[in-house]
Image 1 (cartoon, rainbow, N blue to C red):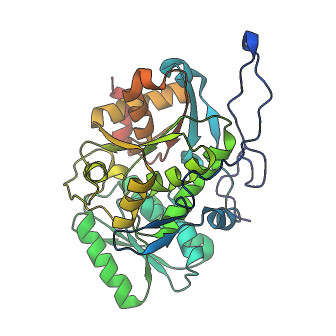
Image 2: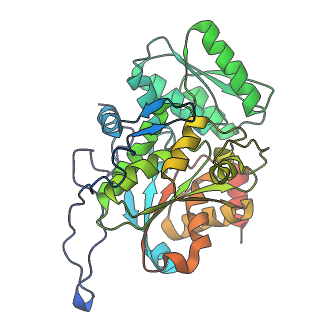
Length: 368
């Protein structure tokens, strides 16, 4: 078994790592109860939903959990004492930065490859984290990977993709231009293109984070999820609501790249330019599958500024001891917006990645 995270995490088959304790009189904590999946308030809508093209999409998260457990262990999910004090609520941090690629993106990429039984090779376009995920997953199962990087791609992420053995194609275009060229290459070579926002396998894989969060807590009120393509937010929402039907899921994107947030509220795809320090939150052209999952399952979507992301990243490091890139701090930046609305509640923050350049780390530490 290849272990992506070999620390003190628990195996998928093991006990949940942390649960919110019930309080007894006098403040004593009761024994934690094992979370049980709640009745399906959405019938089977959390497994089957319709795309705007009226094609049914079946998302089997349990199957994804079974596939991924052969390669990885559950990432830490712990209550942060200091953040709980700062936000006046129970704050639990799902730390996806501890993987070998310092990002959650391995989940969707690996699940897609295994689900589709891909053997010839895979292709994707990416600003970095998704490319790393595809490169790592391809290496794990022994298939070639081609990663098309746009102009100005994150240098830290590019170096890791190269170390993982993928073939890098530097494209002198923005992400959308790189995607077009990557798709043409995949079709010409007969390889599978893994779309970060338009793949059932990617959404399934991302949704396993929701499984780990949902079953770990006896009570959960709000989950804050960083959003770029939308696959993570949609996947986590559909799975969390199976365990906690009344929990709210809030997606957070940079105000410098608001396409998915605006599309969510408009209930249709809206293209927007992107200019943000948080490259992991960039999405100019929404993918319909990810957008449909957001509309179906996510409760709200908001934007935060780059300054808020930098301050939240600094706060995450100093108060929760979790090193994150600006994208990975979007969940905390979003939670800070809610103030009194989350006081006394149990909330989950997903720290999605820690692939910051030295220059960005300097900006984070200088943020006030």
